[in-house]
Length: 114
Image 1 (cartoon, rainbow, N blue to C red):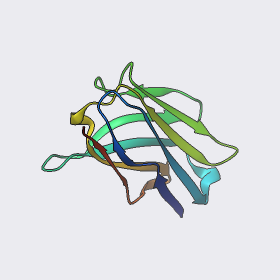
Image 2 (cartoon, helix red, strand yellow):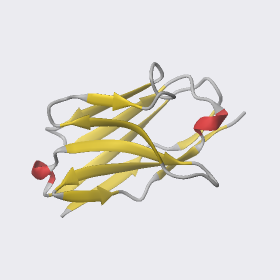
Image 3 (cartoon, one colour):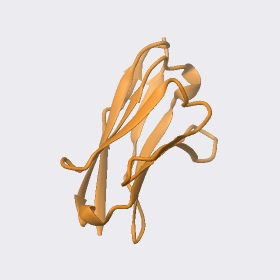
Image 4 (cartoon, helix red, strand yellow):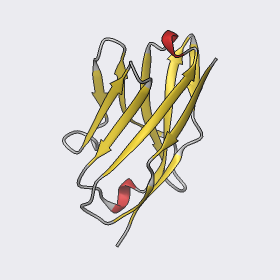
C-alpha cells in the first residue's frame, strides 16, 4: 500500500506561481512512476505531468514551458512547480503513483483568480 497526501494548493493571481507537493508513505520504495492530474469543475480528470523512477518526464501540452514536475526519491515527495498560472488552471490537483497498482491522493485545490 502507498499513501499519498497533496499540499500546497491555494488562491493565486493570474500570472503567479505555486508549488504543489505530494508526500508518499507506506511501500513507497515500490513506486515506479508518479504523476499529477487535475480536474476542473464540470470537466474530466486530465493528465498534467508524470515522471518515472528513471527520471523520464512527460507533460501535457498546456503544462509545457510553465509547469515543472520533480521527484525527490530520498524524501519520497513529488513536486509540481507551476508558473504563469491562468484562470483555466483552476482545478483540484491530484497526485498518483504506480506501485503494482495505481494509488491516488485526495487532491489539493488550486484557484487562479484576481
